[in-house]
Length: 210
Length: 210
Image 1 (cartoon, rainbow over the protein chains, first blue to last red):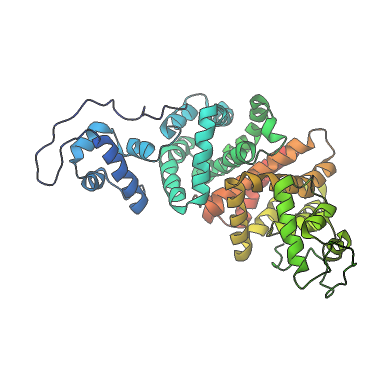
Image 2 (cartoon, chains in turn cyan, red):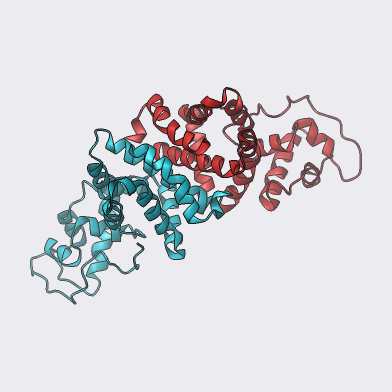
């Protein structure tokens, strides 16, 4: 579920692409990819996720939009890399949705705890959670990104009128679990084995799903 | 549920008490109370809640232990004031335990949301939650204080072998709800009315209680 810092969501680097020669647009340089990411971070921070376009990021980076598409296959990918997300939320959503409906609750808890249980994943998720809690800007961006990439796809599959409320209530339980277990380290939740936690939390999640 | 910054957990100020004249012990000065609080903050931060005694705080403040008792009726009170807690956790525990057992789940959610719903309470609770998430020291202190003043009394009343795990799992749901609703402001949880939230979350809490 965790991915390496160097990508996994972006297309492989195809070397140094040629520029298009238009005035004011620099051709792809040795750190074009880094410059696009810097521009993306600034644009997302300024305007939020929804209002930021690939075109605007390209303008900010001083490159052609086609060059942005060369390095990143979508705005979602750019967001995941620009925010240095420890996981790809699209993979999380896909994992949750891949399986029988009556095991959905257990799958949600298992996948969520799986993301947090690896040492590297845990450090990066903790850092992310801390940024969300302390920075209104990061909170707003994560709210938009996670809504679009996880909460909406899962809500659509539920197919009930108040699906978004249900899915967001599930998010409250999971985020609280992560905070108490991995950040505050409150006992006995902090040292309870994962299988027991999954067994205890799944019925609460089912409550929100049914 | 919220209390004023100037106390509510401490005995009323009885004026300037006389010192006992022992060498090295200063008599109560105009800001003796403030000095005791400063010493308490340092002692709690150094040694944690459990290992800090009233005697050690008195020594740190350079006053007699009797003088600490004059201003604060217990170590719990000193902790609540030293940490500038927005609420008195003992009142929270008392409110939770005061009522029929079959409405315990609903009472827990109602009281918790009540603490967060007032404007002043919300600002102070947010500040507290942010400190817990960003400072390991505050997290450790809150862990100890909340365990002793809320989680343990509530666990004892449940009277089942794994009561502490159950109560701590309830804490994960409530803390996550506060984080998502008031800090991250994720919709639709952020704007759902309190009565609906209580109705939706109570069954999940009951799940942990039963």
